[in-house]
Length: 230
Image 1 (cartoon, helix red, strand yellow):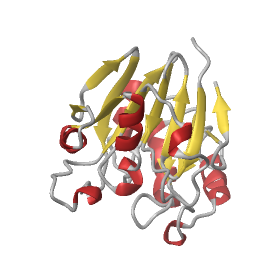
Image 2 (cartoon, one colour; image 1 turned 90 degrees about the vertical axis):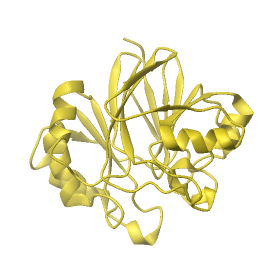
Image 3 (cartoon, helix red, strand yellow; image 1 turned 180 degrees about the horizontal axis):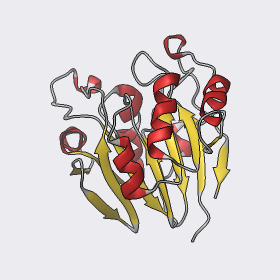
């Protein structure tokens, strides 16, 4: 099992580094909490959960510069390809092996218009990913509300770490995210998608206390730019 470094770049953006570097939802430009600039990032793979600007983010620019492989739901991939950057589409329930990194696309309860297209492209539907990297299993839920089949995600893929939104308004809030942890039963949960903007302001310590009062899952609260290592 390889060492794995998981860095929170702010909002829903994470960089996973083992034998390969996987970047998820690189919303850097325009993100007031971003811990880097797009030019700092040189991933092998980018995974995009859905087409909203705070998730598609700088994907096209980074892809054009680096030539990395870009994975998303079929419709978002079509939009990226329309910009002259190669992307590979997949869909929910499917798994891709991308240079030794596996990506399984899961359900997410949200929406998925492509803001950057002027809404001229179908955004498909939102998703999450279970990622197999460095011998570890990581669940990035994307933007979602809680849903009962999170229990199936836990049973099928046994993610060690769940990256879950807690910001409310556009995603789960704290109450719903605590239930998600109960359903998934990861060893570690990292909250995301909060405090980027005032409308999704939350206190992650409230989330930590609520989780640890119910289950044995460890809550790790990161600041943008901070990381954990496995």
